[in-house]
Figure 1 (cartoon, helix red, strand yellow):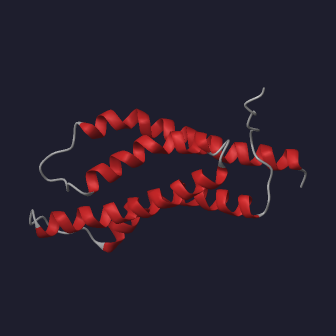
Figure 2 (cartoon, rainbow, N blue to C red):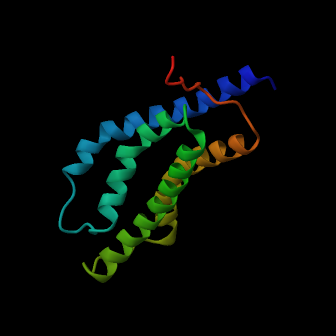
Amino acid sequence: MTDQAKRYLSVGVFSFGMRVGLYCCAILPGSLFTIGANDSLVATPIMLGSFVFFFPTCLLALWRRRQAARILLVMAILWVFAIFIENHYMVVTRWFPGDSLFDLSKESLLALIPLSLGLFGVFTNRAGWPPLLSRRDAAD
C-alpha cells in the first residue's frame, strides 16, 4: 500500500471518529439535563468527559497519532469502568434492581468505538505509517 493510500485510509477512519465526536457533542446538552441524585459522583464526570473529549482527540490524531491513540484507549477503559461503577452505585446506594450482565455488556459496546480507533492509531503508528498532516516548523 502506498503512503498516499495509507494517509487516505487513516484520515477516513479518524474522520469517522470526528463525526461520532460531533454527535456526542450534540447529545451532550440533553444528557446534562438528566443528571440527578441517582447518578454516581464518580461515573458522571467520566461519561460527560468522554462525550466532550472524543471530537478533539480524533482531531488531535491528524497531527499526533500516538498521543491521540493513548487518550482514546484510556477513554474506552474509563467508559467501561464508569458503566460498572454506575451500576454498583445504583444497586448498593439507591437500592435499585441491578442490570443484568447482558444489559451492561450492551452499554459497554459503546466503548468499542474509541477502543477500535485507539488500536488503529497504535497499530498504524507501530507499523510506521506516515503522519496524516505535517507539522510546520517555527521558521515557516
